Image 1 (cartoon, one colour):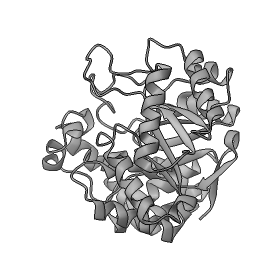
Image 2 (tube, rainbow, N blue to C red; image 1 turned 60 degrees about the horizontal axis):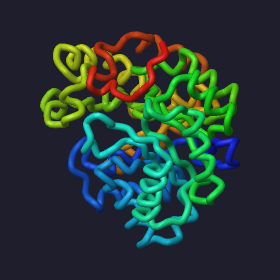
Image 3 (cartoon, rainbow, N blue to C red; image 1 turned 45 degrees about the vertical axis):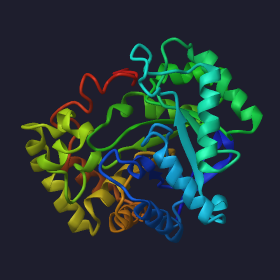
Length: 332
């Protein structure tokens, strides 16, 4: 598989990674066997990057990955692992995010323990804590690099201005935000700022939480999934409108010879050489379709056809509810 780079830490990874939120029960119950099957397929297909977080399944995702690495020690050299910290367990409703140095170090140590490794390649602040200036936080993260616990660090869901402020203290290896044909806000400054600073832009939910697949979640599935049940795009009438709106995209994918999810990945990769999509799945066949999309280079004519099928602003409903918007920095 072709590669993408994290220039500030000299790390080269597969041009598509694995979003390991799917290794928790966030979108439905997942088994150890399903996780192991995806990781086996990743090794077979050359997908080296895994992106997880301590909050996914309250450590469950990291625990599954750690168990796989323990049973397959040679995989430690194959996979490049990123994780995140900074979201609390919500035991204190007044402080949902904690970026204090002592708290983060404890969380990072717990992550290393669950993964069974001495260092991870990339550590993100999952959400900014308004109590801690980003310059101070960046110094903390630079200290984790100096200690050898992480090779580099990044931020999730921050604004371009925050990235520039952090980068003035220490080079930021990556910024992670939702980006897909249904969520294009990063094109309003973040993707450009990342390119200017040589910061890798990591795109989560690149298949629109199923909307950009051959089988979008129906209302019954959405209502059975706590996050989607309260997400505007998966509530009626928006869900039916969104499924209908994506039908031409699915037809185009079939015409090209890709799954719809594979075409969504190909589109994402075509938007910049510094963009790394990290789709998640529990299904090996779906994973293979995603990988096929990562290998496919869209022509200029095909890129125009994709954006004609799903022009900017086509989606019905905001990407988050008001409650879900707690934490991400809005900038456009």
